[in-house]
Image (cartoon, rainbow, N blue to C red; front, side, top):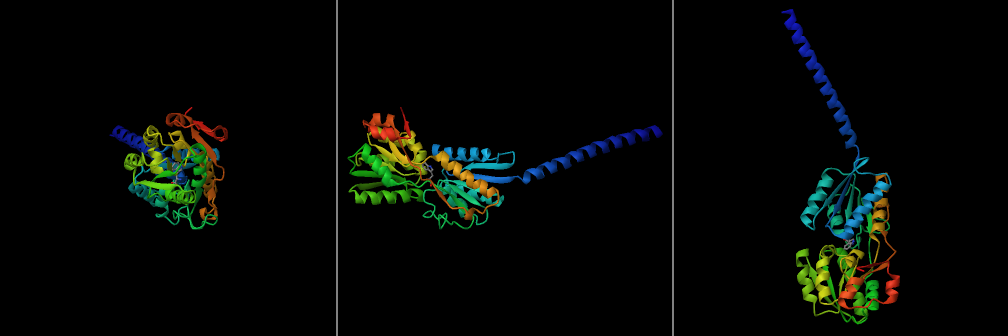
Length: 335
Ligand code: TRP
């Protein structure tokens, strides 16, 4: 009887020990997860995959790490891509807001518009918004106020057209290829229309509302224009190889808003460096993570512009790139 009791006792003791060890483990685990809960959460939202936006995203994440903010170590970075879909943009924005992220970085105008309409409290830093005021992101570039600031990649349609005329001087009609619901594009197209009016150039518009309409829009310009102009448009950029294929076959020069669109087969641009823009965006993010109010940071516009050309495209469409243009170019793609 005594022996039995001793056995039962020792079983109970062992059980107790096991339980308390397990309990101990649990305590440790919850301490650990509490620690990770205090890590600041940064949400990055991107409208669509295209090379320029991917460059910006990578540059932001690399620069944050370079400044000591490493994903999984001292901050959590949650990256989401809306695959070009407005409904996804809303869902992702709401997820970041409802889960009380500490900072939201929105790459490109449509993402920024979606986030800004969901929160007036969480700091939002937009990246590469062409026209932050016209797009309703901020009221004043120098004094944004509220919870929003960011970087702008405003380019000049006039400067791009001046470059276009150095390469292909006989432009009488230009096709404007863009998504009319992207306010970032509309801003640049308005600038194109002003330039065209002053220079006796006719603008033929070919607008799309999503990437599935791009092919048809390009087709509609073939035979009617001397050149195609496409601004910093996310929908066109994501379908740029297709645009280039059709236009280059028809031997129409395509002038664009960004270097990546030249790399993907456009003929030329006068544009900004998106790796630098990504770094500037990360600098702002660091300021906010350190406690500064987003609205107290002025919107940053990139002032350094460079010429980018595509030699392969020039060869395909039978255009000779002038020596001085080639000399000035920051990068010659397609050699
Ligand atoms: N400026 C665009 C916007 O406001 C985003 C963008 C950045 C972009 N780089 C680009 C669009 C290159 C097309 C191509 O949404």
